Length: 87
Image (cartoon, rainbow, N blue to C red):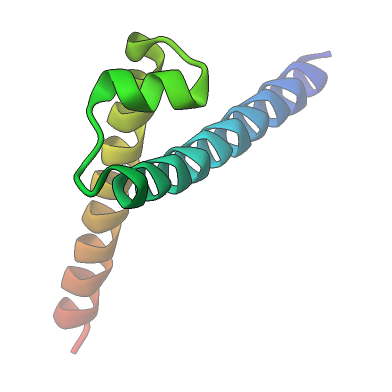
């Protein structure tokens, strides 16, 4: 029973990560298209309207994207440090 719970939790975590990745990808496309259409960087309300999301939801996606990049950079730096230590 415990193994099933762990498996289900892992599955849900993966689905959440996939949804986040999809949302970030859509956000990037929308921001690029809006910038081209407007001739400037779009503001939060314009992005939210185009994505049919609330401004809070868009901000949450942006925050998660920033956090994901920070984690990736941190992991890369850690691997780099380990490689240097092993030389």
